[in-house]
Image 1 (cartoon, rainbow over the protein chains, first blue to last red):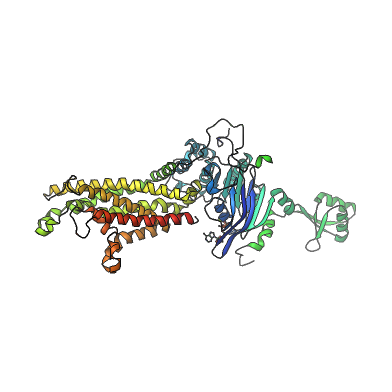
Image 2 (tube, rainbow over the protein chains, first blue to last red; image 1 turned 90 degrees about the vertical axis):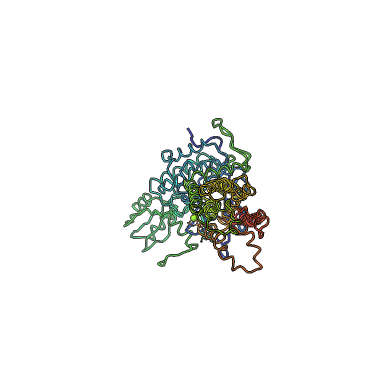
Length: 314
Length: 283
Ligand SMILES: Nc1ncnc2c1ncn2[C@@H]1O[C@H](COP(=O)(O)OP(=O)(O)OP(=O)(O)O)[C@@H](O)[C@H]1O
Ligand SMILES: [Mg+2]
């Protein structure tokens, strides 16, 4: 039984078009355009200070764009008649009054949008907070506060969900829970936008990636394409006759480039296939190591030019 | 992919979900006021502050009038002409305005301090509506609490004066009801001023300091005001505007309700600034 859904999911897309935000002389978000589709988890990635939170605030009508627009189902956030029914957001898990109970916090939100009080119980249950509903939010651990924030976002059973770094500071169990949760929300047909500055985080959650750096769009791609382009298994090979092997491998359809210390980096063939080819041609291999180019590396590579604050050692 | 191309809010995606109540489609203003009430009443500090208001308010009345009998006995005939038992029992407004001011300030600054303002505005994106609801709530609470305190102080004070054998007033005497009710109106106006300061300054400390400056400091240094600004003092809280709490005619303030009205205009102007800033600023 679906505890959350009280009816049809109202699916919308988020359309960000030419979105720009200037704070004084600083352009914090710079001509950003992307779309968040229903049924997908869209990972919104960027290093610290890239403008992720600012973009989300503009989508939610909390900050006014200097230029451009962000719409939900074609409407400006301010024009949503009953916003919580369309969009749920968690920007800052700490944003609760510490001496209000979880139940009362949610009740006030439900009342504001005319949602039945039963929704409070439903979202508390879905986020596993039923037993602490009467506790003051100030006594909550970070993980419980994140859950409370997610419960608040789910109150109106919205088709669009926006989460700003929801796993920040969570323990592995909490991270796993949130990941599964995002996936299930997207599976229900909702559009889910999740920001993070950790690529590894997104690799396991998102189907689509929007990468920004210094407010500018760096990549807007499906997760699969990104994986294929960036972490396709390459194999590091060292052998007695690299030139000969390189020729053979190329002939077999692989892509070969020179690696460090006269090694070869081979893409397009598995380690086993390379080993067989070498053995058949009597080439002695001294090393045959599949490379797991991490997504983190790919992300660093992608955003290295846009880092706002570089460490002293770099 | 056609399933995902819904671009109009009205075209909800049909599913085979169980029949349920339709989601709300409109947001009447009363709902926003109700929300503010839920938020207000769900904080324990609200009730502590209101209890503090009653305690401090009545406590001050009791202390102030405890030995007034001896004072009255020492008065000259001329001083006795100006004896205003109603006003004597209402001086508690001085402290009450500060406590009610704190309530008004916290209604908005607690949301800024916690970041809750973002959640509130995401739920109610029409900003003027949210602030108007807060203003309605604050005014209603302050009016009820303020009137209750003024009436209670009046009756407590008159009972104490009577017990000491000093001339006292009854609620039906000329000008008495007007003074008592005026005190409640005055307090409600101060609560709105406090709310406006909270919105403009977005921080409890700053707003409270400004409120204290307005209601205590400036009246304390009123003598230093240049003459051309003197007219302002006629409408200033604790000064001219508080004349409404008196029953003995003062030739300087022939129509004290006008002075209070002047203060209300000032409050309205401050509140207007608050509304404009509240709409314009990012949160
Ligand atoms: N109200 C503001 N006034 C001035 N500058 C701001 C304001 N809000 C954000 N900024 C600046 O905008 C930039 C982007 O901030 P933002 O919080 O959107 O980044 P982010 O991508 O969410 O970063 P993080 O991963 O650290 O959360 C930062 O350089 C920040 O200093
Ligand atoms: Mg951020």
